[in-house]
Image 1 (cartoon, rainbow, N blue to C red):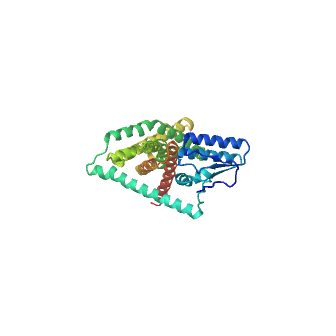
Image 2 (cartoon, helix red, strand yellow):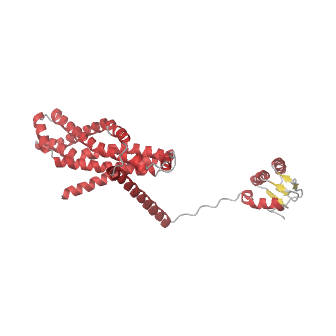
Image 3 (cartoon, one colour):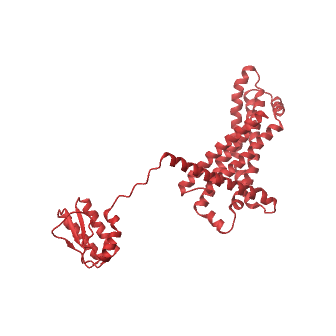
Length: 367
């Protein structure tokens, strides 16, 4: 039986030994290279006497085939029989070095369909996460299945106490900015005292909750995503499930409750810090009376405005928690996947916070 690999002929074929394995294959490879180095354009190998061919010998045949191809020559394998012929037929694609077929190109409809199915799968995953989080955060504790209070205390400290400084500082600076920009306009009509009203209303209804939500999403939301993504990549989430522990109860519920308590509390501090920044501008730069400024602030502040801001902050807290947990648990890949999931989480948080804030603005405009 003949097993031709490349066309061509030679007057002096190389005869392979009866057992073509490691040592014999190396000698045959050396002989082929010697003929190629001598300028042969076609080298034939007679395999009629080969009774036993193993993968090591076949590997040297492949090396000889590659050496011939690199020199623009041909290598022909003749006369293989029995087990040697069957192995050569099995290894023919590797011996011939055929290029791998290119994957089929996806068309526009395939790409659109894939994107739609991927988004639908993500929405189903987000729905399941929301249901689990609702049950283990609200319904289960109400039925006697308590929260992990130790984990909740740790989360309150990490998310709340450690964020007080950055939240108050940024809102204080924003209060100064809002007061200065407002004063530049109100000074033209001699009503700079109204800056106090504007700052109080702005921070009570909008800026306090909004800026706090952005800060918490960038700080705490990113940390939650990175933590859960690392646990997912390291298969710690799978280990928890294999031990019979519910991930929503064990990890998500304490984080959601901590955010629900922390974000409104930080929003109250943000309101106070923003008004403090406006107060500094009013007294130090605008020359207003401290008593008059305070009275204007108290007269402009209403419980309804503060309640609106606190309601927004609670909704923002839920958004931050669910989005962070969703992206952390759906991470794919290693360290790069963790980074991409964290970035995606922050971007989604900010986008959904702005969308929710717009919905609130439309609602309170017509109500």
